[in-house]
Length: 162
Image (tube, rainbow, N blue to C red; front, side, top):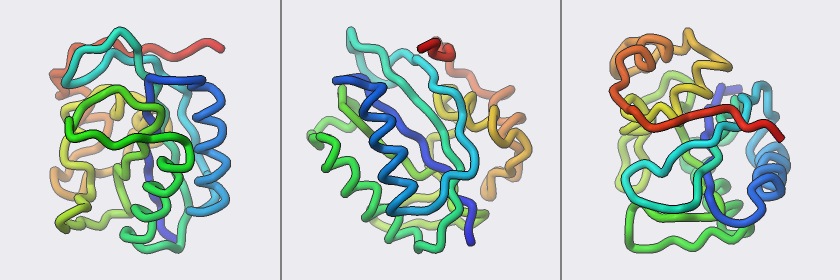
């Protein structure tokens, strides 16, 4: 079994229901969720929007390959109403990013693991730090705690009370 770390994100629709549905489908199709961060409300990163994002990190124990994890997460996104646009950063109902797949480094045309911009994004680092601050980034050889301390991102990231 591999420890997989995923980031849920979204800023459109009924976020509470969409996140709940996403977690249920991931648990069913990808692997058992073994750790779950709080849900965080975050400002949009890389573009402007009136709608704030929700973000949540989960640890999943999986037997799937990285490519199969990508196929499953993209299928779940589609099922939950994700519409992919040409803009890289845009409002969306759900986004499921693969942050880490064990300590593996994967570089393919449509898949980069670890996530190539995780060190720049507090909305990913803060919830990941909550569930595994000692996780070592296999490229930078730094813990999540260290990456968070070094992160220059100034956008607001606050736990959601719901």
